[in-house]
Image 1 (tube, rainbow, N blue to C red):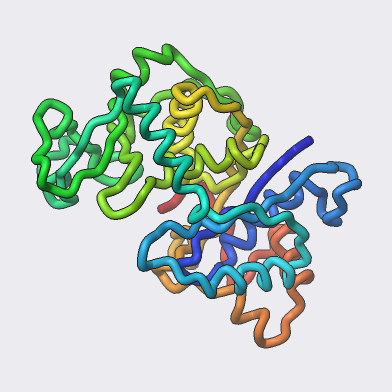
Image 2: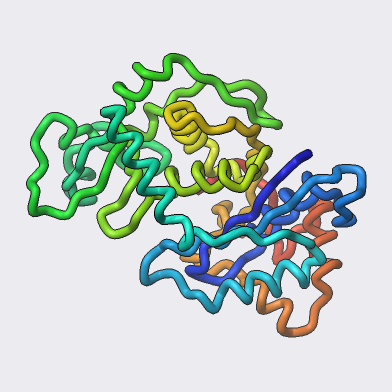
Length: 286
């Protein structure tokens, strides 16, 4: 059985890129008609990723449900991230016992100034705190030591439904943060643990997150988690050839819903590449 999920963060309204991602996940699991006993016969889950501190707005979760219903999608809702904090702490304790974590007190400005290379998420962390004692009084994040982690796991692979087999090479990200200074878990740790707990067998998301998957595969190996397959779909781009984003004020689905437009018709346009608002399909443009 295929199990997929849509996991939005309630820090802004859903835009058409979210709609497309939800429809891809929905249709791969349930089929376009949304029938659990249809050709696909799988499960499509909704998980609210609500641990983004003060940026999280609980009231938006209800808006998300109304948006998905307006698009004609059917789902099962699983517990939100805010109920899973103990699992994140337990995983960090296990990783710490393996000796693959270290404290990092660097600020973003310090990382940018010291970085030699730039990766898909910005300046690559140069490992400044890996070789020094952290100030016990300073706020600290927890980073994964890639060298030590890969020495434990050995070579790893993962499989994308579109790109095919991939070798794990997390170096373009540098040692990633697993627990932020201000939050209980980073995206990398939380999404890996949550997908495993929810039984997700096919992780669907945009190409802009392709680079993150080696980190998630490495965490799965270290923590003994089930390994899913991945499906990294193309992105919807705006008129300036950039991916849609909340921070850019991309058109909200709710605006169309609230003025009485036909959500199922819009969903069909997305399925058949008739992009709304002149948006076009593209690769991983940031």
